Amino acid sequence: MAKKPKTITVNDLMQKSYTYSITAPMGKNFDPEFKPDLTPKQMLEIGVFGGHYLGDCQKEFPADWYKKAKLNHERHDPKLNFFGVNASQPLSVWRAKGWIHPEDPRGWFQWYCRYFMGRRLPEEDRRQIKRWKTIRRHKTQIINACGPRELVCRPRQRQALLHWAYDSRKF
Figure 1 (tube, rainbow, N blue to C red):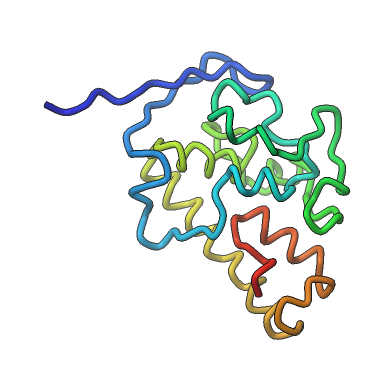
Figure 2 (cartoon, rainbow, N blue to C red):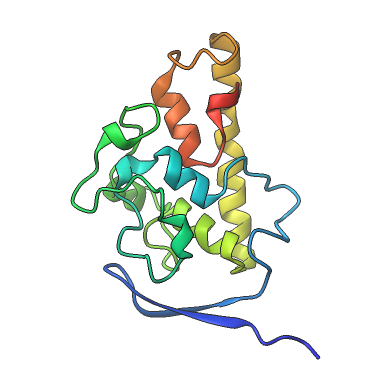
């Protein structure tokens, strides 16, 4: 007998009564082309998005994701980022470029958190994984321009990679 998918209902500042189903085990059954270095929990702990991300979503995601998360509920604070620099574009830029999908009004990281939780939206998953793969070019640029683990080299680019679950601290 198949297990009934769990339904998540979201009521936060950007979505009201949005529901989705969890159809895969958390952190498993990823597309074979999608191999992020970091989990959402790890990203929140090391410092991404100036700490101004998912602060009002604590009912949607596991509580342990937030225990050591570097968050600022009031504003984007680049000092909370691992590299201490701003590597984000405003949400308005993302919207203008058509990068925001209605299911995930906060963008790629919200998609990743929900994908990690087990939500699957095949068409949107393919689109987001394709976008994630294109960011890999920044990893190559850092490797070509910097010495091994020379973390002071290209900090903005390294921080941007952290925002996409590439662990730029390791190359």
